[in-house]
Length: 350
Image 1 (cartoon, one colour):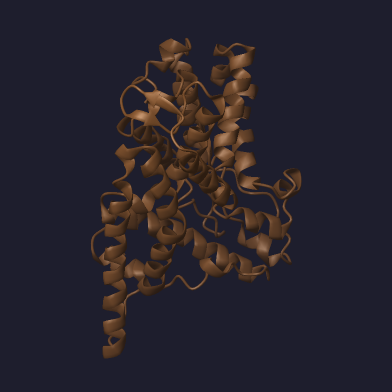
Image 2: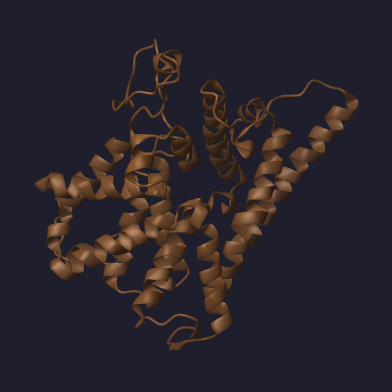
């Protein structure tokens, strides 16, 4: 992705250093991310997280099914596809493109497999450190940049002069903060505001455009919009099997968080509870698409017409989920044995 835009040459970045940095990011994703059974049994007082990639058979720690290295690479790659196939790169400077790709790679770094609300409800050290505001996003920014600050062999930031370094750090931070679901409404409102304002400039490839490359605010908005969009784009995959695989992964994390909240006697997150059958899972995915994904990508499709087909793929995947719901209801009427969503998923060979 960096080579496609000749960014290594553009910023005199050392290839080996970038590869080492990517490896360090990968290793930091490969960690156990849930709390040990002994922490729960000690009266609900949670200790430190396990930092190694493997634990003994005596605890209940497991790796993140969703918030892992594969999600990080996927998010960076989807951003790349938005830029290239959507012709959005024409509105950005090379330094913006670099920041978007690197931001996608680290946006969930050191993720615990639970959400911000879980951190806040438990009053964790991270929640206190970041004043309950975008806790995990701010932690990811800190961890990603700390790899540069604390290890000279990984410090690609030193390739930039002082002003550009501040620009990159700010761009990455703002783009990652936009992935906080609590900021979804703000990002969507900004996108709609661009549409309401009307064309701002003339683009050589598409004529009138809502975005102006000369405007730094517009360029930063694209990074925020694309990183948030890439983060929630799994329901739009052209293959339902892939979209469903990501759904199973995130729902596994949701179910585990709901169980953990119940064990710790915390308020249970409603939308994460009861996702133990294909009917509830399918309904959740349809609702997620309708409430968050579809409105955002409707705006993205209008701002970048070459991406307007993505919601069509999302609708097609929702049709598959509607078929799951219909089959489930028919089975329920016949009072036949029902497979769980996960059993059905495995049974189909996915």
